[in-house]
Length: 264
Image (cartoon, rainbow, N blue to C red; front, side, top):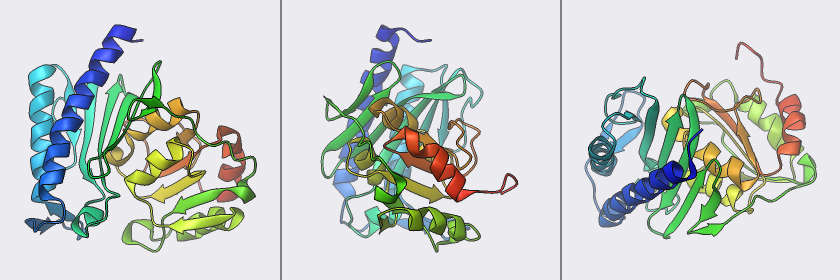
């Protein structure tokens, strides 16, 4: 368990990293950027690479014993006690098309479990932070999730009919049809909206560790709950599916509706 002083120091550092990356995001936003495509056709821009390079340099300088897991560069000291998990531009396609719903995601794991998270949207100047023992905040103001009383009253943000949900759309559909109404498509911004009490549920498939590492410390410390599709706490080794709820009391019913096979 970290002391209050240790946690505050880590939060302060995470904010400095977000400040530095925010300058890069604003510099390139809605401007032509160099873009490459991975083997799965997902785009990588110069903004992704430049942002992660800056973040890695800052971590290595401030905390040389800490590890780093990023999206664009090889892992560094991945078995360290503290591991920073970086997604320099989560929602690169949103960035490329000029939508201000992408975000920097920065998470910190301590002994394999996530203890600190940052979602930073540099264009709208909104920053969500969360840390165990400290709470969750939007631009420094404490936030709490909305406690929707029933699944059939919930507003959900959902994925579906994309390459990374192939074979799992049926399960997402079951949850969606049990809710009140849905927003189609999930952006990192949506997790901040859920933490601040504007959405009730987010369900997605296909995220890797850098996509969800930052989310638990924010959502859980705002009074919500984020798990995999089996209801398990997210860790460095979690599978690639996520459910986030503003009201944790609804999770057993949602998991029952989803009924995702154990070997799925």
